Structures are given as C-alpha cells and as structure tokens.
Image: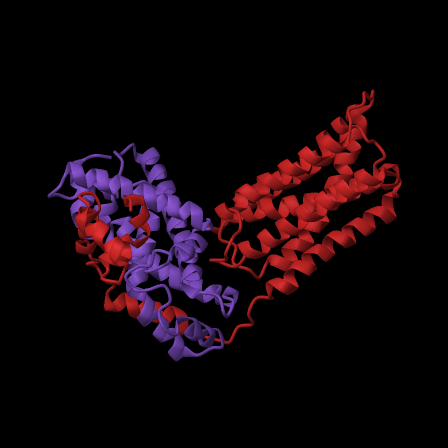
Length: 194
Length: 260
C-alpha cells in the first residue's frame, strides 16, 4: 500500500483524454487543462513562492506538453509523464533565473535579488509548512500532497526509485515532526530552524 | 506500530481517506504524528491559476492541434538499438580482422561478450526509457551508467592478466582511435533512433548514449585486438568507452545550454 495524495493516484479518464488529445481532439485538450491546471499550478506555487513564476512555468509546461505529446505511451499513467516535464521546466527556469541574476549582479554590482524564502508571507500555506525542508524532500511531499501522486508515480516523475522516494518522505516527516515539536502551536518555517 | 510505520499513510489520512484502525489509532494517540497530520490537513492549497492563465494554457494545446504519431514502442526500439551495435561490430570485424577474438580462450570469450551484451542491453533499455518522461526505472540512470562501466572494468580485470609491454602508449592510442572511430557513427545512429523522444536531462541521456556507443567500440576492439594485457584493455579499450561517455556528457551539456 503506497502513499496516495489528496486527489487519488489516477484521476478518472486522464489517460483516455491524453490519447484523444494525441489524436487531435481539441475538446480532450481543453478537458485536460481543466482537470490538471490547478494541481499543476500548485506544484509550482508550492515550490517557487511567486505567483508570476508559477504562472510562467505552468504555461511553459503546457507548451512543452504540446510539443512532446507524442512521447506519452497509451496505457501508462499520465501524471508521472506530466510531472516529469513540469519538474524539468522548474529546473530549467531556476537555472535560467540564476544565470540572469548572476549576470545582472556582475554587470551593475547590485545586491542580490531577495530570495523566495524572504517572501515567506506570500507563500501558500503548504509551501510555508515545507519551506524548512531540503529541495528534494519538498518536491516529494508536494507531488504527494498537492498533486496526488503515489510513491511509485513520484519515483517515475523524479527519475528515481520507489525506495529512494520513501526514504525522502520518511526524512521529511521526521524533520517536520521535530520542528512541530519545537513549535507546537506555530508553523515550522516561522521557527527559523533550518 | 511506530511513527515510521505510519509514514506511508500520513497524506492519505490528512486528506480524509480511510486507513486501517491501527494506523488511525497510532496517529490519533501519538504526540509526534498528530501535529504533523494536523499541519498537513490545515495547509490547504490556497492559490489557483487565473482565468487568463487557463485560457493561455488551453490556447497552447489547441492552437494548430494535429494528430501525432506516437513514439515507437520500447519493444521495437530496443532491438533497433542492439542492431546498430551488431552492424558496427560486423563492420569492425570486416575492416580490421578478428585476431583479438581468436586470441581469447573460451572463458574469456564468454565473459567478455556476455558482459558487453548485458551492459549494452541495460544501457539501451535506460536510453529508451529516458526519452519517455515519467518512465519506470529499475535503477537511477546515473547509477546504472556507473555500475555498467564499473562491472565491465572489474570483469576485464579478472579475466585478463597484466603483461609488460614496451609499446603501451603507441599500441594503446591506436586502439583508442579505432574504438572512437566505431563509437562516433554508432552514436550518430543512436541519435537518429532516439531523436523523436523527449530528452529531459540532455547531459545524462548524452552520457548514456555515449556509453552505449562506446561499448560498440569495445566490442570491435575485443574482436580485433590480440593484446590480452589487462593494463592495455583497461586503459585503452575501457578508456574508449569512458571517452565516448564523456563526449556524450559534454555534447548533452552544450545542447542543454544552447536550448535554454
């Protein structure tokens, strides 16, 4: 029995919709956007902490999904396919922003742009909860909680193994438990224990 | 029941899904798990995409929407990748002869070609899965790559013995050159077969394809080179596979940088 998130591991008809989308059905494409946009947006919002970034990355993910839609294999679960692409968009976006910001700083010798962490008050609540965790643990918990993937699907989406994901989740929970013990009535990210 | 035992049910329980009575009893009675579940339950997703964003996403998908031909199946791709290696090996045997194969004893023949065959199948399998996002992996590709090359080197170190040779570098460079001359066309053919896929991690896929092509070079070298010194084989034959892997990694990095 694996961990399953808030939305269950296989939302109805997603796979069939994807196959219809591959065959050029515009109504199926619209349904996919309707069914998946909120969770996809949540994936970025929980980890980026910035609404504009989440908007941009969601859009970039849909563009990439459109470009590589032929690589989805009918019969396979759709969510790992989508979130593997979304994860790559996030990594590429992070690298691009880091490159741009380092160039800007080098050119004008300005102080660094405030990080998303400093804007913690603008983060959604789940992002605040997981903010003290390392990136790989944040990602695993987000995919489980916000996106409703199972452990096996998280492993597929992150090019990892189920055992490694379980280990990551155990460590994340252990750390959150310890932080919540220190701050019984508060949010762990506000306790400053990082 | 321990806290670790219920970790697999934390999100499900927080989301209101049914869990076994033992799990529920532990969570409700545990001073460490109860606050965690409460925190996760209360930390609902509060942000949603805007209507404009949804419209843009829909437009991205339906604009110029045409039917697409799905990627070739894994069952068809794997034999095609292996066929490339066979063609390269046959070409190498024809071009440079088979003195190496004839110099091997039975145990060495079985060991060398079994190890090369298994390594090639595993790498081809990994490359085929890397071009399909969200594929199930038996091992993380980085680990698989290191394991294949490491086991190959270990196997060769066991099967062959060291001999002193005065022309270690001269002979070695010749083998390295031939190995790479075979690996480069193999890599190009692999790229032709894999290019329709979605390459999410270009350096890793590049290294995997480079290693697979490098094994093609090693196959040719084992067929042609009669030098059975373990130093020579490890340094120059396995070295050709390593150089090919590095070449794939570098090309992958360059591709990724140009793409972004």
